[in-house]
Image (cartoon, rainbow over all chains, first blue to last red; front, side, top):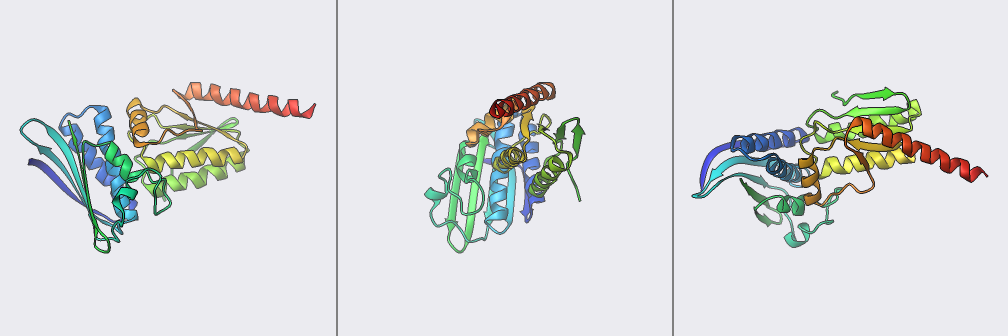
Length: 134
Length: 129
């Protein structure tokens, strides 16, 4: 997979979440995503960026336009060095939350994307990567 | 501090959300709106989200809480102008905003509020007899 364009963001506060979703929108628009596809990747970005700030204690995000032999897409990678997730299966279940949310963040973000990868080491941090193809 | 303006229109309050809200701004709206409902004795709240390009679970939850809080303060809430792409995404996200009355535009929203208020008054009268 080839990276066509990449923007990097520090995620510390809720204003940073807004910057990340605006970048996701920019990349999706630049690749010619339709409005529904733009909205899906932007919404998924917002959920994950908030998780990084609220549960990961802050971290960073990469917002990328990517391309393989057949198509283009928008990829986002979120990394934090927070407490990590003990049980990823459980964290992906709708309704599960360790905070005060409704627990739709992770599972919801996964449903809004074509590819979703999560790795987490308790005590070390979490990395989530999502991709939505055009 | 940055704020979302709340306009008073007769018995109603009108909120037009035009900015890409960060979470603190969304929470501020909750506080401002509940105080304004009490201050003006408003019986209806119209929230216009026609220019909002994204509603995620946080904003969705905030809208649901506003409707719930308003209800406790004797006001009905109608959410107007949601873009189709936002509706599609919200349902896929797992959030169908049940319990929030919606309308396609401000005019239809006002009509919905008036009929909700008329219904509530009708119910009051019938319990008096």
